[in-house]
Image (cartoon, rainbow, N blue to C red):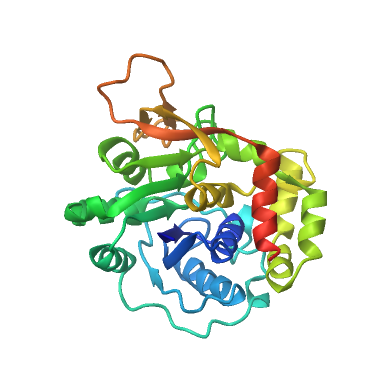
Length: 311
């Protein structure tokens, strides 16, 4: 089994990512750490605890991390997409947590787990990358313990929060730049270019609603998210951004990647938070490369996520 830490801001797509991971025997879920993002840190942490309870994994420690970006505050959260509580206003429909949040800061918990790890650990940041940037800055000696970073964020062709920027990267561009452009840990980036292609439809959601306790619990969280995609993309379905990244963390190679340099715009102009993915061939041998996931078998991927959640 691959040891895995999820760093997250639940969030409806984060909920699916956690449930997918909890149902996957290929990985050993060591911890869930939380960060500000879709909603504030208090909500994201409470949501993570309740989601693990739903999935029958209250044994997994949850630690709260950064409640704001490294440098500049963000103008808004994504409550218009995920609901005021992050889960379509339905967080209270989930089981109450039977375990308290871990007393350590998220970065301290990640560092402790890496320090004692006997094999490489995958870290999956599926919210703003603030906690992971802090981990790499404070504990560079632990980088050899990280097998891969598998992150959801960015776009090669335009954003969903601004014309240029995807939400996770836009929420803390300085942290994302550190993780994607300045470090040397093997990294996979799963951008909007792929996640939008992997949107699930009404039939997929009907199958989810007919499933067991976990599946029905997840389905109950989707109304505001589904309504957003009906309005924004014109589809009766939704996009499982973070679950697509976790599919790669669980089953390496399920996404097809291209090694590219990635820069993050940290200016204060209209491009702030944009990810510049350099796909030019033969010009990048001297630059740090990130494995950018730009292709996958979309049908296979949808079945992979659904079959696990329905278990």
